[in-house]
Structure formats: C-alpha cells, structure tokens
Image (cartoon, rainbow, N blue to C red):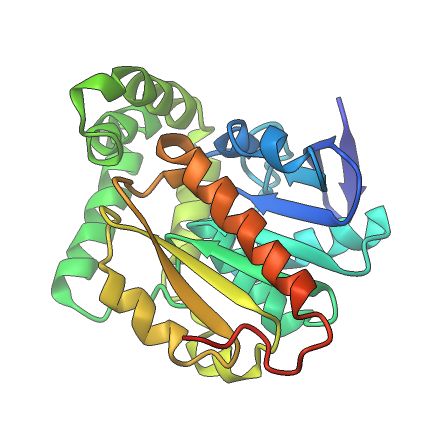
Length: 273
C-alpha cells in the first residue's frame, strides 16, 4: 500500500502511467476513488498521482482542526517529497479549493489548474447558504455520515438508471470516520482566496456541470477575475462529474493539455474567453 509520511500525518496514494505529472484531488468526504473512471484514461499518456487527503480514505486522520490551507500544505509537502517540481493539478469540489490554495501559496509548483464544480470561496453570504451548512453539520453530528450520504446521493445522481452510483455514494460517504468528516466539513466554512485570484498566473480551466449545486453564472464571475482562464460546461452532469461524465472530463482535460503544449511559447496563454 503506497503511503508517504509527512509531518504529523501520512497520505495514501495511487500512481500510474508515465510522463508529465498530473495530480488528481478528490472532494469532501470522498477519496481517490472519485477518479477511478478518469485516472486510467489519463495514465495512457501522463504520470497520474491520486492521493487521499488528510482525514479521508486510507490516509491518516490525526486530531485537530482541518481546513483548506492545511490540506494544501499537505499536498505541497507531498509533491516535494515525490520530487515534483511542476505539476498539473485537477481538483473536484474540495479538491478544486485545494488547487486554488496551492496556486496562490505555491505558484512555482502548479503548472496548470483544472477546477471541477468548485470555486475560490466558501463564505456563506446568504441566509440560505448559512442554513444549508448548519443543516449539514446537524445531520453529521446527530445522525452520522451514512444518513447524510442518503440525503446527498439522490441529489448527486437523480436518474433512475443511476441507482448503482447512488448506492456507491451511500457506501463511500457513509464509511467516513464521523469526527474526521465533521472536522473536514467545518474546515471549509469561511475559507476564501477570492481576493488573491489576481495573483494566479498559471492557465486555469474551469469545468462546470449543468446540474451542479451552483449555476454557471457563479463560475463565470470568478473566471472573469482570473488572468488566464476559461470556462467549459459539462453537459448532463451533476456535482460528481468524474463519476457521471468521466469521458467529458477526460476529453476536456486532454484538450486543455494539448492547448498548453501548443501555446507553451505563446505569451497570450489561453486567451479566447
């Protein structure tokens, strides 16, 4: 079982393929299994590295408060230990937040960033968002991860033919260690790097599902604040896009990388947005 020891924690990870490194970062309450339909396709041409974030999956779940800056420091140290000087980061949901944090804290490490159904800000600015977060925390505290998973699963995968995906969500989210899951959830609240987006210079591709929790307009608003970014919609997809539309993600990411290689010596960057 591949593990890497960091200060105060060790991270489980999977690795496959060869070539330029791609780091796949999973969502809250999940694990590297988020990427099981995506990683093999990317590994045909790239070195694909898939860690479980602190408190998740088969990684350690040490005591203390969790949060995006801590997760990003872990991942930066993880990359340093593996000798990764420049890496293409792909993050889903919480993984996208970690990607943003890495891009502002360790810009020399992040060659490019793909953000899937995520954003640079988790500040609840409306009563609706505050109540939604409070409800989630109450369910976790009183009823546990499995009950929350049963609430979330139909929202992620509403179609009749997605029964197996719903079952999978209940099993995977329900298996979380309750205290670590609560601390990870609490650690997202109030996080933001919105004011630092202007400092991100690496190319950014934002992938937004048409049935995500937040509308396309929310993603467009922050894409417009980035200097070298564009937005692409994923069709017929919910929040957990790597599971319901892996082919679209693979094609988008591969196209993005081809574009980066084609413009490696072009100071215009992505352009066209």
